[in-house]
Amino acid sequence: MKQGILSQILDYANRANPYPLYEELRRTPVFHDGEGPYVVSTYHEIHGLLHDPRLSSDTRNRGAAAGDPLAGQEEGEGQLPPSFLKLDPPEHDRLRRMTNRPFGPPHSPRRIDGMREELRSVVKGLIDGLADGRGGSGGGDGIDLVEQFSYPFPVTMICRLLGVPREDEARFHVWADTLAASLDPDPDADAEQREKVTSSARMELGMYLAGLIEERRKNPGDDMLSQLAAGHGQGETMSTMELLSTAALLLIAGHETTVNLITNGMLTLLRHPDVLERLRREPRLAVPLVEELLRYEPPVQLLPQRTPLSDIEVCGVTIPKGAPMWLVLAAGNRDPQRFENPDRFDPDRKDVQHLGLGSGIHSCFGAPLARLEAQLALSELARRLHNPRLLDDPPPYRRNAVLRGPRHLMIACDDVRP
Ligand code: HEM
Image (tube, rainbow, N blue to C red; front, top):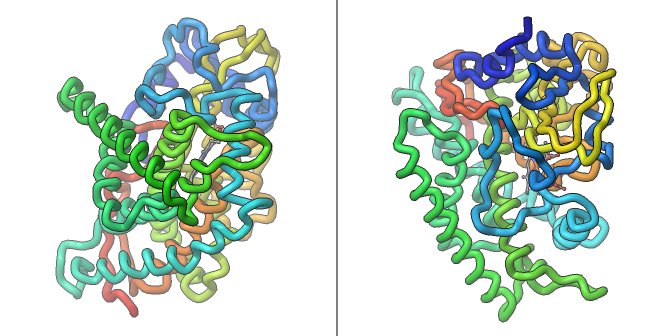
């Protein structure tokens, strides 16, 4: 009966609403159709596996990934050594710990909160810019929220976080766009040409970052790259190659995901106008609302890169050492065994321990920044757009089944408030 369900999940025709497929998948918590990946879709099993040291994130531990339709489609960092996303302890822990020193508590408790005013001012500038095309009675063809807001916002913030000089931000945006587009290949486009463009963007970005690191070693600033380049006590330093793959990881992991969280957020709010109106009156609702969004419409739908280091048994199924696995976070997030009324979007939900940012040792490193960005973006959009409405529902989606989100989100509004 389940034959073909994985290809249905990957089928673009189902991108706008994969949730009925996930419901079907959950009936077999560990699904395997004989040759493809072992697919885990229930909340408690996924949660347990994310904390299980017998699972590796290092794809080099994978046997021949026969039949895994996502093999080779993961985010590419090119010729760089694997980033800590794809490493196991102790290497993972060493690099994550060092990256955290200039990023979060206990060493840098102010880094993200200290970006609040800058975040606000970038959000303000982008929303001011929406006034021209607002559509409706204001004229214009409408606003593409993805192009005009969700897309430029996170990459600007990653630049500020890393310490990319303002005058270089535009170049950085182009590389980030090219790398993001490579995560969402158009099957009709010329694959060879695309690979050329992607690898030259990767190369240029790598060379640019290497130059910036060199410069920051000589003239350190207060930014994250300078502090990472300087290293910290106890002989812990990152090699230049490690630093490069960490910077590329922060860029790639923090870009498309945040774009999709903001866009999925606005789409969900426009489909729930009562909640949108509440957010306009009560901006603090943004905090629980973003958590519920990470449950209800998670930007990372599934993790395709775990591999067991030995045979493991889950729900009576033996998953052999080296077999490819998918952990379908978005299916776990709507598991009725874990959440009451899981298909209802309810920002007042009392217990919302979702899987949207992962869990365990690889849980999202950038979570404090992602949360703050989405909270500020959605509360400001709700406050400033007067009578916003969707022009296209469902919107066109990106092809990517793993990092799922709309390619465009066309909206109209009567006015953009100051
Ligand atoms: C809404 C936005 C975001 C979502 C939904 C998201 C989601 C995730 C998820 C699900 C993981 C777990 C991956 C795994 O277990 O294999 C992860 C890891 C990671 N994320 Fe995020 N992320 C977001 C934003 C960011 C941002 C803004 C940054 C950087 C500033 C970032 C950096 C990372 C890094 C470095 C890891 C790897 C952590 C590790 O392996 O220890 N993410 N993210």
